[in-house]
Length: 99
Image 1 (tube, one colour):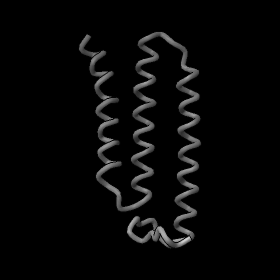
Image 2: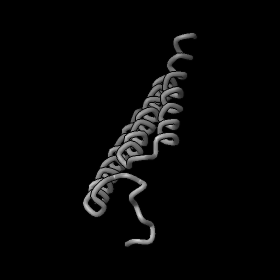
Image 3: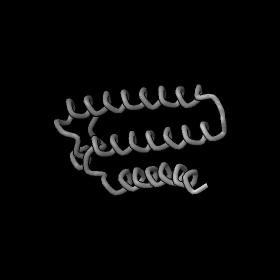
C-alpha cells in the first residue's frame, strides 16, 4: 500500500515543481516552454500510473503523448519565429504595440 501511494505522490510532486518553474521563471520564452513540457511529462506519468493501476488500455495515454509532441513542435516553431523577428527570446524585449 505504501508503494502505491509513492507512485501517486511522485507525479503530483513533479507537476507541482513544473508549475512552480512555470510561474516563477518568466525571463526567457525557452524556459517557459521547457517548464510546460515538464508539466506535460508529469501529467503523462500520472495518467500512465493511474491507467495501469486501474487495468485500462493505454490508447488514451498514447493519444495524449501525441498531442504533447504536437504542442512541443508548435512551441519550438513559435520560439524560432520569435528569435527571427526579435533577435532573442527575452520577454522584456517584446513590444506589444509593434507588429
